[in-house]
Length: 119
Ligand code: 5GP
Ligand code: ZN
Image 1 (tube, rainbow, N blue to C red):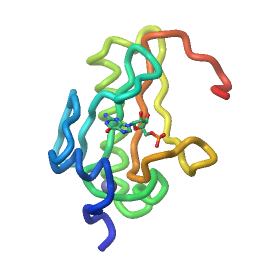
Image 2: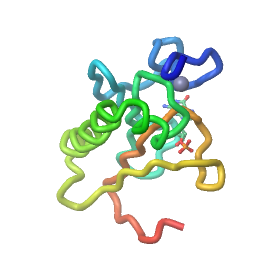
Image 3: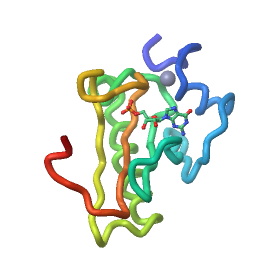
Image 4: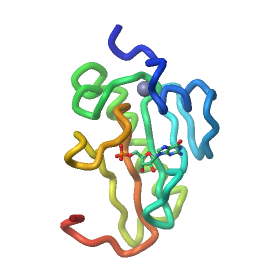
């Protein structure tokens, strides 16, 4: 069924506590944890507890949870004190754009200067 945990999904395993992660925030619908290979001083992933392959699929099926992801991304930025200098919220979508884990997630990046376009 749509949104159900997938046995072979890394982020579903993190949601289930089967793989450890450094969790910084959790709500009824979301988990935020530090990226294992950080690309900036702050690099946190915000994921829905439900499984959808990407952000577009998530917002189509469960728009309220997609809004929760954006709200939590903002809260992470506040917690990490990266708002003043600017930060980025990114949804890589598709392997051509660098998506490697096909469970929707927002990257929250900050704490250093960020170039635009990102490349
Ligand atoms: P994507 O490339 O799909 O946009 O982002 C996936 C992110 O997940 C990458 O930045 C990668 O470093 C991170 N990642 C992959 N495996 C793990 C893991 O086991 N734990 C954590 N915390 N992050 C992971
Ligand atoms: Zn999943």
